[in-house]
Image 1 (spheres, rainbow, N blue to C red):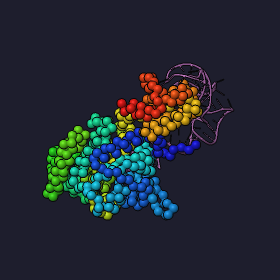
Image 2: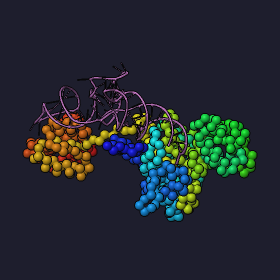
Image 3: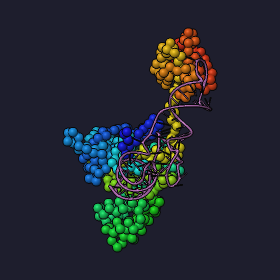
Image 4: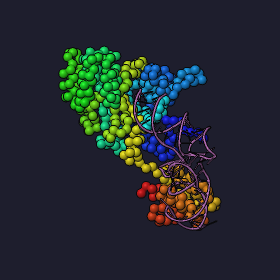
Length: 440
RNA sequence: GUGGUUGUAGCUCAGCUGGUCAGAGCACCGGAUUGUGGUUCCGGGGGUCGCCGGUUCAAAUCCGGUCAGCCACCCCA
């Protein structure tokens, strides 16, 4: 028989319920922060993604040539579409633009736990706000997105870092722009690979002095407070303009941290300059959410990308944003027992005796459904005893009994399936009776 | 893309060194039960043991390949 494609998931009702739960919480969080929902097409021009990420990305896309000869690809992320949409209306959009999107994305790569070929992401972005006020909102939303599921500071934290600060430092070391980018990508991997390998990669930039630099980089990565960062950076930077830049940058840090502190979110934040994110297009603050137990891959990632919209769509527009994937969050919530048990329960179950009673029953079934109740009944005629079993297992609170006696008396017997009490209700009063029961 | 590891019913698994080894529990369906319940009892459907090939008198079991899952690497938008 046919099998599921590797890296894709089936969503049976139980899984669909979980997915809906995630989406519902994300939407609710984003709305509270004043974000508006957008979406773009699943399929975009291959060139859009190539323009954003370079040629290497093509290897990791589901792409093909369509019947019109266009090179197209399933979106591997939402940001390029966002840039296209926002860029096209950049002049007329009221700033700041606060948008969020929830969408399925596709990446052609070998799957692993928490990493699939198709997944969903919640993305939130603020466009047109160059200062740390945007990061405050975004990080607050990111944290709220997790706490609204019941996760707390014991479960996850947000690591905060800054590529600008690194650039000031590396420039002070005499590196040019290209070398800085190279060293940043080495720093990104530092914690995850053996020292020898790191040293090897630093060789082209620092030559004989590479071990010394690796030590310095390691100490910078370990700094946990603004004061320590300032002291270290100023001690290792002599150029006046760079020193001035560092001071200004630290002022932005203070704004960001005091804003988050004032919102009561300080306990979720960790300063960690080891986070630089592999991507070259990030330009300032970058951050990552991770589980405190350190067992899963990153829960979310984001940062500032001030030049991307200009690159993809023309207009200059400051931008920052983050994305939360569904797979890792799902695992975390499951392990913390924070996924609610979804019960597909009926409100009412009609127990119907024979064809004669069906007519009266169906009339009520339809009316009650119109009134908003979830009403079920056995599709095939079954013995009363059997129907009561089904009524019980349906989770319904009330059974509506349509037997020959009730039909003859123009009543419906309403049985409370929890306390087993029964009441004969005149057919004309049924809707009112039911409404009253469920409102009380 | 590379390497390691796993693969028996929808799910969780049992099946020792090749010889009633195709099984259990749960789930599902039916009956006991034609006016009252999720319990209980009885019964039933469902698997070419991932797939293909090889060794053997005989393969779920051994060997090779392949596919898929998991882990690590690569990459991580």
